[in-house]
Image 1 (spheres, one colour):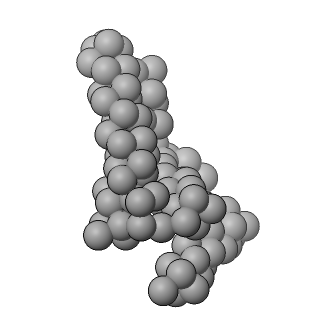
Image 2: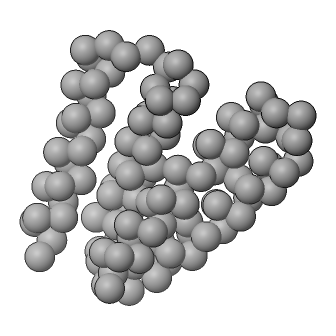
Length: 106
């Protein structure tokens, strides 16, 4: 159950930078700022739940990793962030780290 909570927390972790970005590009700034705030709160709640089952270091690293990779992908797909070899390589290392932490935690 802890890994499910952690995955959900990671998905909500993607929501708050998305909301911040959208608030800068939309006339509905406050809607997106509220979206960010709700995403933050839900992300923290599910991270808290996950730490009942998963060690703090693993949970935190995976949570931030999911958020970072998700924001990276959204940036490329929707905001025309640059796609370079070193950016892709770097995010690949983050993904490998997330997988390694999952596999080593049992």
